[in-house]
Image 1 (tube, rainbow, N blue to C red):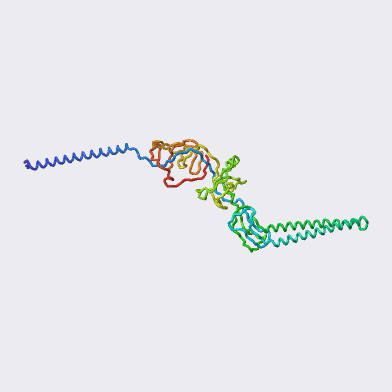
Image 2 (image 1 turned 90 degrees about the vertical axis):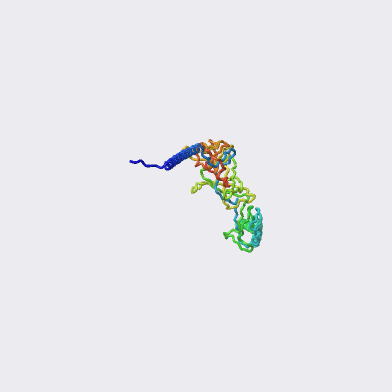
Length: 403
């Protein structure tokens, strides 16, 4: 076999391309090793970096005086409500009030034509004079016939008949006096006066109308607004607490608007109703208010806040900070390093958006109010204001329950 002849130039090209291929493989291997090292370094750096802090709402536990309230929905009632009706028949001659006017007790409101009753009074007085004259005549006859009886001129029977007539005339005179009193009474009914101080409502009659005692429609209604009453209900379970506190001191009641945001007036608890409503399981309470500014109005619906007691040095926290677990109530507490820890607490009282703590927290502790679902013990947090403050809202609430 003959050996193939290779040109010298071709041999040099093979050597050149072989060197280039080896150099390319070397560079690729170096790049691959460098990439693997960079990824390992990145993963190592990520593993050593702590997780970011969790943003949560945080509030501070406070200590101070805490008012315990019992609340209920109530209705304002006039202290006195008088529906004025006529007790006699007659024509209205005068109306001496304006609708919506404030009147005092004894103010003259209406005048019914008094002339028929003045005539009746004069007639009764005339009958009295006539019967008194007849009685005096009977007594004079009795005295004259008594002398004749002693002389034996008349019989004893005739004298007794004259004496018996005294009683008849005396009875008639008594009836005449009663008729006079009745006429005077009817005459006073002609002048209708306000029996209580209060505010006059819309009148139902006008001057010139003829009214009768048999009519059932009142001529006007007067409501006493100062003072004024508030009747509200509470659950029967809270009755004993209120009764015990009521025996110890006078309890204060605040009246709030229907949205429970605006305080209208402050009064005192007057009494507790004598029975419980079995259909609703509630009992009625009645409070009185001076109502000097007429902030309360009859039949107005309001929220009543009964101040049951004042607790000094009470530890309070937002109710939203309390969590329920299998071991009871707990909360997340933020330490000085912004790390959260779980802490078991005992709640003594829940009132609206606030709880009173009996154990587990101290004044100045910071507790998490929003975002607890993201937390575990030992995590870093970024404290923020509670959600209702960030949103510009305010929290309010009524009494809850004692535990």
